Image (cartoon, one colour):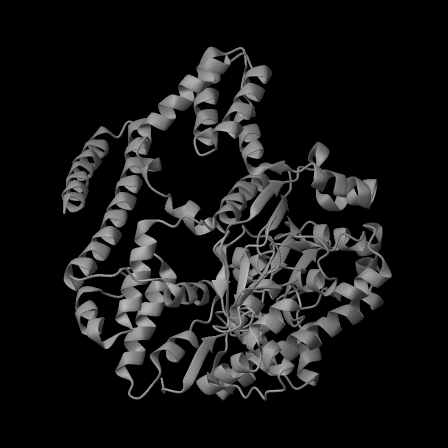
Length: 611
C-alpha cells in the first residue's frame, strides 16, 4: 500500500469493490466541512466556553452532554461515550459507510472525489453483465406473467394488485426447458454467462443447458440499491421444491441481503423499527397494505451479516415468522443473532397459526400494526416458549420449568426479576420464594461472573464509567505514537493482543504507518479508521490523558498486566459456563478437567494481581 492512498473495502450496500481515496482528499474533506456547521444541521448547539454543547443525538439525552470542539474538530458525549470526527458523525447519524460519508461531505464542499478501483476490470465487467442479464430475465418473466393467465391469477387470487405486481416486478417462468435461454440468447448473452448468473442449469453428464426456473411465478430479488441480483420462484402445482432460489453467484449471496430492504428504504423509515418476515408473499402483502418497514430473510435463517446490514437503518426489530415448528426454531435462532447485534428485539405472533400474508389480507393494516405493538419482548417470548407443553399439575415438570425460567432471569436486573417472578408465581402453582431459591442456585453457579464487566454487555452498551483495561489499552496505543516508546512496545505487544477489536486495527495501522517514511502518523491512522468504532476509539485515544510517571517500564507493565488480568477473567468466565453445562449433562470427567484448568487460571490471576 502506498503512503498516500487510503483503501476501503466497500460493503454490501455498494458491492464488494476495493476502492482507494487519496489520503490528502480525506484531509481536505474534513478541513472544508467544519464539524460545528455539519452537526448543527441536526443538533441544536449552544456556545459554552471554548466548545459547543447540545443534546446527544445518539441516546435519550435529558440535559446537554454532547460536546463539539471547533478547535479539535471532534465531538464527544460525556453521558453515553460516543465520540469521533465529522466523518464519524455522518456515518453514525445517517447510517452511512465511510465511502458514503466521504461522498456526502465531498459534495457539500464541492470537492471532486476521484475514486480509483483496484478491482480487476474483467471482474467488474462480469458483474455488470450478470446484473444486466438478470434485468433482461426479469423483463422476460414480467412479460410472461401478462401473457399466461394461470400465473397472473395466482397473484390476483391472493389479493395482490396490478400496481403491486409492477412495483415488485413479479413474473412467470413458463413450463419450458429453453424459454429463458432462447430469449436471452436473442439479447446477446452466452450460455456460460447465464449459467454463472444462476438463470440456467447444466446436465453434468451431457453438458446440456436448460432453464433453472420452469412453471413458477417469479420474484426478482433486489439489493439495497435496487439492482436485480437473483430470483425466487414458486411452483403453481404440487411439484418439489415448492420454492426455488437462485444459487449463490458473484452478485447474489442470500446471507448478506434482505428481500424488500430497497423498498423499505425508498419509502423512508418513519419509525426506528423493522419487521422481519420469512417469505416473499408475506413481505409483498404487508407492503401493499402500507406496512413498508418490512423485510424478508429470503427463506433462510437470519445471518450475522444480515443483522449488520439492518443495523445501519434501525435499532429495533420485530420478528414475525410462521407459527409452525420450523418457523419457531428459526425465530429463536434469529432472536439470538439480533440480540447479539445489539437490537431491541420483539416477537410478533400471528394468531391461529396464520402467516402475516393471510392475516393482513383478512384483517387489514391496523389489526396487524396492533399485533406489532403488542409484540412480546425477548424475555417474555423465551418464558412463553419454556412454558409450552408444561403440565402444571406434574411436580417434576414444574421443577424443570422453574429451573429453565430461573436461567432466563439470571441476567436481568433486580426489578425485572421481581416483576417476572411475581407474574410466573401468579400463573403457576410455584411460590415466589421457591422461584427466588431456584434463581439463587443459578446465580451461585455463576457468582463470579459479575465481578467484572461482561464482555458482551460492554460491547453492546456504552458505559460512562469505563473499565481499567480499556483505559490501559488506550494509554499503550497513545504511547506507541511516540518514538520514545514505539520500539519497546512493538516488542512486547503482538497484533491481536488487545481486547477491543478496533484497538487491534489501530495498532496494526500504527505499525504500517511507522514503516513508511516522512508521514504524519496521526493523519495516516485517522484517515484509515474507516468504521464508526475505530474512528470513535481513535478520537478517545488522542484525547486520553496520560498519567504522570517516573518509571516508564513499571507503568507499561502495569497497563499490560491490567489487560492480561481481564483476559484471564474472560477465560475463567467461559470455562465456568462450560463447567455448568457439563455438570447438567452428567459429563463428570469433562467437568473435572475444567475444574483443574479453572484452578490454574485462578492462581495465575491471583499471582498477576499481587504483581
